[in-house]
Length: 158
Image (tube, rainbow, N blue to C red):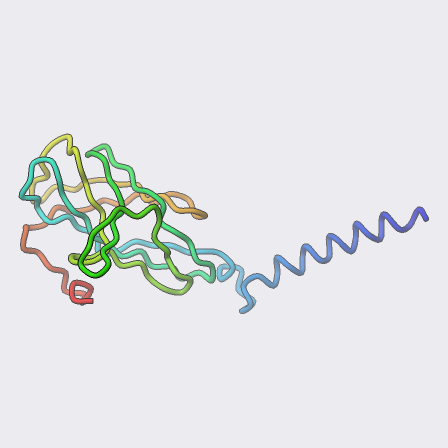
């Protein structure tokens, strides 16, 4: 009977190792977790002194989905908004699919800056911190562009 607890512990350790090794399915350690990067960030120069919108693309090269849960900035209150059928509403979280993108763009999902501490001026940058359900926060410097700016990467027309 004294060998059974040791055998059970060894079996549990082996199962745990196999589960961890098998998470990704492709044999790559990086594929079993979200692998996030941010690009194309900008804020059109706001017409209001108290509100602005922000746009960016979060790319996930990893094999696990994550979720954008909140955004913080010293510039004011920032909320994540989703647009469905032309109706904008605050979202508690937006999915960042495995091996995919979460695109925040004009006319679609976006960041909403409210109660600005000052009006954003073209040429400056605004620092924001993106918070996720599973990944570490990501700090992004968002340049303030002309009010009519549209990115050339094709995301403005999705």
